[in-house]
Amino acid sequence: MDTLGPFLEILIGGLLSGVLYSLVALGFVLIFKASSVFNFAQGAMVLLAGLALVRSLDLLIGYGFPVWAAVVLALVFAGGVMALTAYFAERFVLGPLVNQDSLTLFMATIGLAFILLGAGQIIFGSDVYPLALYPTDAWILLESVFPGGILVNKLDIWGGVIAGLLVAGLAIFFQRTKIGRALRAVADDHSAAQSVGISIDWIWFVVWLASGLVALAAATVWGTKLGVQFSIVFLALKAFPVLIIGGFTSVPGAIVGGLLIGAGEKLAEAYLGPFIGGGIEYWFAYVVALLVLLVRPQGLFGERIIERI
Image (cartoon, rainbow, N blue to C red; front, side, top):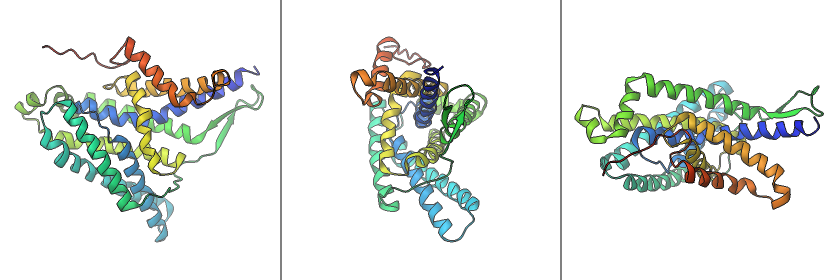
C-alpha cells in the first residue's frame, strides 16, 4: 500500500495532464477531419484566443464590471476574435487554394501561424498575463486508504470535464447534423462536394470557427495553468505525438492519445528517470509516436487511407 498510493497519484496526474494535451489536439483533428488540412496554426490560435480573453477580461474588470459579467463578455469577445480569425483563414488563406494539394495547404497554415503570432503581439502585447478562471488548488483523496492520500489538482479535473463535453459535442456534430456530414464530404473530395452544391467557403468557415472555439476552451485551461504567454504556442508540438497515436481523423483518438502520452511520460519520469536521467517528459511522447508509426501509421483510431494510382 505504501507504493500503490504514490503510483496512483502519478498515474492520475499523468492521465489528467494528458487530457490537457488532448484539448489542443482536438483542434487539429477537427480541421483535418473536415478539410484534410493539417493546421500548423492551431497553437497560435490557442494563444490568440487566450490573449483576447485575458486582455478583455482585465479591461472589463477595470471598468467595474462584476466578475461573472466580465467573464461572460470576455468569452463572447474572444469567440468573436476566433470568428474573425476563421473568416480571415477561409477568405484570404485557404479559399484561394481550393483543390490544391495538401502540402500547399499545410504551408499556407504555417504562414497563417506567423501572421496570428505577429497580430497577437501587436494588438495585445507580449507579456505574461495571469488568468484565474478555474480553481488551482488540490483535493486530497482516500486519506483513510493510503498514507497522506492521493493529490488531485482541481484544474486538471476541469480540463477533463471540458474535454469530455467537447468530444461528446463534436461526435454528435459530425454524425448527426447536416453540416457535419457536409464537412466529411468536403474532406473526401472538394470537387465532388462542390458538384452536389456544397459551398466549400461556408464549410471551411464553419470548421475553422469550430476549431477556434476549441482553441478558446484550451486557452482557458492552459492560460490558468501557465498564464497566457507566447510559450503556449509550443503546446502544438506536444499535440503532434497525441495525433499520431490517436489518429488524425479521430476525435476520441485525440483523447485516448493524450491519456496514453500523459500517463506514460509521468510514469516514465518517476520510475525510469532515476536510472537514465531526467528530462524524459520532453522526448518520451515522440519515441512512443515513432513506434506507433512503425506498427500502425494511421494511429490507433485513424482511418486507413487508400489511394488508387
